[in-house]
Length: 496
Image (tube, rainbow, N blue to C red; front, top):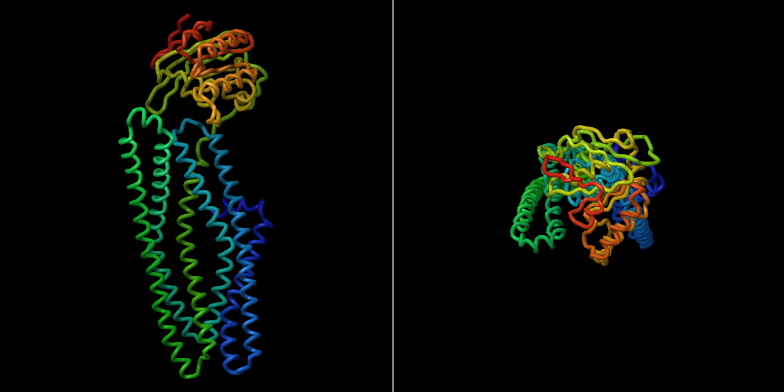
């Protein structure tokens, strides 16, 4: 996991160095504070000189200003770096999804939320740990050194306290990981269900499905709520156990330290420093215990990211076509799981002809178009472009330069346009591409009679330049076709 994330840190070495420098300055200031406080108490009380008072107060003030400035720049630099690296990881995972085969059926809203959260959590943990582990280790060692310098019994007390912290962590770490993973998954599902309520609001109202969608949303919430509550309960006992262990031993420090002050073996200043450095030492132990807890969260995020990065990759050929004059499908079959869409379908499409494909919903019309575009691959059978098998063709290049598609749902972000305006823009864009293959899925959607007439004239005027495939039940478009293909479920028949 660490090696995976550090690859992304390579492009930001200078920013990382600045963050590390700020962290070192802050740690040094924190480490000096108990020592200066002890010296202040002992020397001012013993000397009774106002000059010594001013000197120590000025030093403490300057130290606090330096620490504040270093903390400020640490927050700014680390926030920027975290955002940059997280965005780079998200971009890489997104690119992986672009390259993946689209046979997997995943809700993309759920996937987007999952990628964003897991990437951010993973980068935040590793980036913070890369700096904090070293800093906290130094603070812990220095604090232990001071405890040892004032008496071996203080180190023994610290060791016993640290042992209790470790026992609590190792007893709960496996369950923490399991609950963290469950919370992440149920949270993503909850967000997916919430998004559905907005995304499908028109259909929900149209078909009066409010009760069904509300029920699904509530079930998703209950699962998320239950997982979150279970995790919170366990984290409470984890934190509560550590906090109370520290409190018990702090009381012991006060008792034994107070006795040492009374018998003169420990100065008041050193007693104050002792408490400060004992707190430092326990904070270091708590940090490393929390680091283990945070590692379980980050590990859950890493596992989920790697699941996506291991999606099967779309195989793209290397042969670049300059033109497409014919498309042949030979005994092509396709299915989603157990659901068969096309079975042993064969057909030859050639330049200069218009083909209209009709059939009921689910008969395989859109699937046929996606197969021709190489977006999905057949379970069996072969597809050829000018006699070259589709698997050998660079389909990314072909889709960009040789194939134009008018989708059933227009790929436009501008919601201010009407459905008819968006449709016209999609059609004009497809024709402007001057592609060898033109695929149009229900192009008459949202078009008035005049626009459909103009479309049919344009299709006929350009038919000699391309292979034209149209999915439509509109008689005006069917009439311009040279051949009409009627698809029925699992059966393909030809009507001229």
